[in-house]
Length: 316
Length: 288
Image (tube, rainbow over all chains, first blue to last red):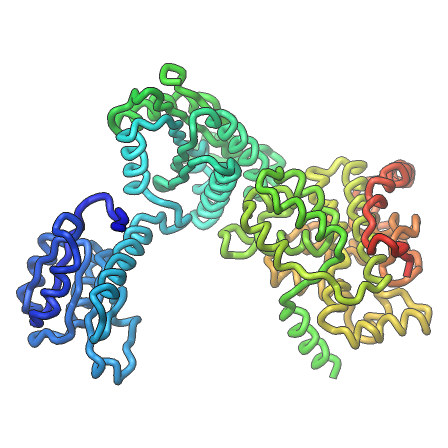
């Protein structure tokens, strides 16, 4: 019956003067799943929230010292707390006027009377939605570092065999320097689509694609298809990337620029370098090992100005 | 008055939601996308034979949603970047023309023929990315399809004028609408963020010498259009030959003997595309 939605215990803060509401929330979860702290006054809660931000915050509009919207506003106005999901708990009378959700940055609301079941599902949905949104790369919307590390560590813990590939672009910086950031973003969006679609093209296999940031991407595939995946990514990238240059640079096969010393430098067209680490027979114990090996391999891959991939033969 | 017509026609044209196509190719692609193991190459090959499906995938991949508008001009690249799910969505949401008029079949054949011819011209002229030129040829008359769907009454009137006044379709459009499909093409290309090379070919294939930035693309499509009409393959709406712009050959840097080579190549390869029948099984793919 009980689905495991979260990897670790979740911490929630409930701001409410209503003992019935507190009892309801405390009774809904096993303490191992969600641990609730109940605070009956809004002002007093601020310091607790700022010092130890919970995974979710429920704010009752019946607080007598401040309106729930104000609590949400204070929390959400700080960039470090913006990601903290907030659910408002309202009464029917609060629904008489329209709410300006542009100003009140809540994530969801509940209106009394509601069932325990409803409250529980609302909280779960809000937590899951927040974890999805929080870690996504803002440009490509691919899962970011937290999800990547979590995925790798999960696979290691389960002693699953897998291949972990780190991809990055050669000469991306010189492209950015010449064409500007928005043209650089175009290339990153293209790269993301190429990797995602090629990896998803292996239908029926367990795969994962993430965006570490900048021009660094990661994909995870079963070991037996790793090399073919690399070959396909390299071929598609090399085929498409010339179209992101202006026609004169494309003709010239790269960017020619003069540096500050007056020296003429040539940068070839961008290429993709991929380093692949294999985890077989439970060889890896920790995420850090995987990334350390990959970084070493990447240096090797980078020695080649053309698109290429390097497989970690020791672990294969 | 004329400006009013143009403004309202443009609004009509750009509000197009559904570009229908012909059942044959659509059936084939639909069958391919049902199997998730079908290769992108196989799907691309079929889509590249249909101007509407090609236009749809190019429109989608160049939409700002994907983050690189105006960059992608190849069907194969489009499919790699869109991915299988999106392609399947595009195919599923494509309908067929309710009325399978022979002029529509003729227009499809004309477009596929022009894609082949334009690609051959580009190869003969030793231009980079000949596939991109094929797409230019394929889409050069897309405005006619959109006009038929969005402005059916006016489209009919153009057809009437072609028949009764012995005009070329392009001339009849100007007489009836005040503007031609080249203009419609330009509106569509802008609205759909198509790459500037394709836009130039679509909007300037009748007057390559007036092309601003990519005269080679416009000139190649112009010569392609000329060749497919010489062979009377398919039908662009009228049965008249287009005058070949002498400027076009100059822009491409090819001679009349080069053109001969292309004509021979077209004759040799025509069977490849003419094997594509667009009509229902029993209908004779007609010359309208």
